[in-house]
Length: 450
Image 1 (tube, rainbow, N blue to C red):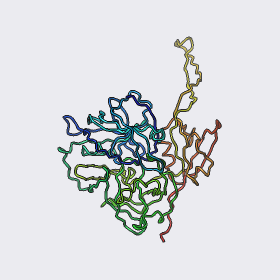
Image 2: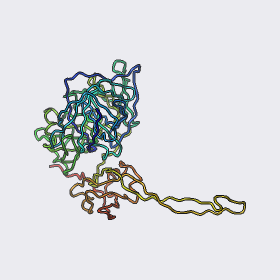
Image 3: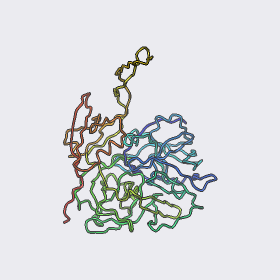
Image 4: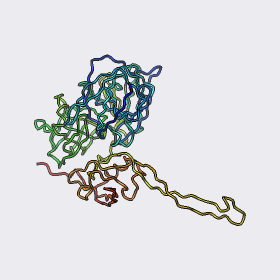
């Protein structure tokens, strides 16, 4: 069966875990004990090469999902999936369930690891697509089926994972590491740790979520003292789940304590109750620890022994930055760009003599298709909104740099710079070129404790 379709999501990957009673095969490494697979790290997210039924695609490695989900397959018309049935999936967000196809007996390959009998869910909702937010093609997410079969080493600094056979893997002595027991609910991994809010240390159970680019999510609970009220907070778009947009408050927490590893002034999001009603079905969960924190470590994830080991890397002391502009930008198709070229012409039809050579330069132009970076969301009261920018403005240049000459991630990084940084934007709006400027603001202004 040949399938085509498309979908959209945000840089936040928060999906429901889909359980299935159907038996299926496992990933294995034929004739190898381990295999190194390199990945792209984009906005803290691990983008892996994955082959499905002979077609090469890119997937997010997301420990928050149990079954692979395929989307954004408009340009993969040659992909064939097997044995399909229609189902409905439910995830984070305040919307309805999403129609999908469940397919069995598919061939998956990641590096040299293969699974000849893999289940997959195919979603055609055009609103679920990571590509516009990340600026690179992404066709789906995969998690539990990789982690359950291997001891998985994740090296965030060098951008590779090692898939190791569990039966032959040997742990090395590591005095600078910390290991934690994992617990599981619906095949999702949870860790017990502590957060400091105000003057109170609170034990919490957090989902380990490599598929979210945020730092920390906490579910507000007055009975435990988990509240955003201790620091200034602001309402914001947190991302998009399978069932719609996720909104909530953003603030900071005094620290996150991972045994001897202590991270201070950690950015934290408090999603609203409507967005997380499905996630709260697991009553013991207090939130998520996500990739902005996880990237500060190299990890050994061992589902077989219910253990995760953390070792600090050089990202550990990096500051917790945030979008200080209020702009959310996407790569929305292409725009026509006029580029100048220069042709060199020699006199005498290119011939020269010993006395002189005449060279003329003729300026010419070419029209090329380049990525279009469009403002899709503006935080209310943000510097960008106050300056007069609007949704659907197309960014032409930023601080004098032509937007089409830089990657989407570099555009985003401009908006995460230090407070007080001047941002100058040239945008196209209704076929007019407009100029704006504003200064980045500290969005996490501290206030005294009560």
